[in-house]
Length: 257
Image (tube, rainbow, N blue to C red):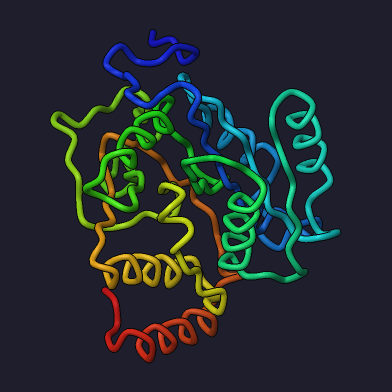
């Protein structure tokens, strides 16, 4: 059985060990009111279990709404803060996912010296080497943003998540908002449109924004993730989706597929 506490044999790092990375984690939907009942501290713990680097110092920035974060989630984060470099950032009540992301990136830029930034959604399983592979990929000059690849797209059973390997792993033009990374210069230029109310259309918008700058955004099968089945309809329903669709079309002149 593979040792999850050690990097895989074929994983390496060419980045100097003193280079640091900040992982931004939006606690979107982890609320006391349980607006999204599927989002529990157990789901959070599954997501965070292997969110780490074997080679580099990693700090964490958790973004949550003031006074609304689930108490069990807060307790879990207090324990993490005692053990490692963890910060908390507040956003206004009833903030959109885009506001969470924007606040986290802005805080990381202003309060860390990290060269690399990673955004990771806490309702996803991450491959044990995902962070180190992602750091290696964004350290190359041919892409501006690199994201993970969701094995659910290929109908891989969750039970096979750790054992499944793509051979060879491929890269695609595209963007998965559940896990993506970029360097500090890209972060300084990136504009998050906080007016979007859904993650899906924010994903389209970020991808289109990067492409509009003549830069590349990719999804890599070498960075496996597995999205959990979460019902978002209470936060992102038909009205929000239609409003975002209209906003995207007005902004970019087409409807994404």
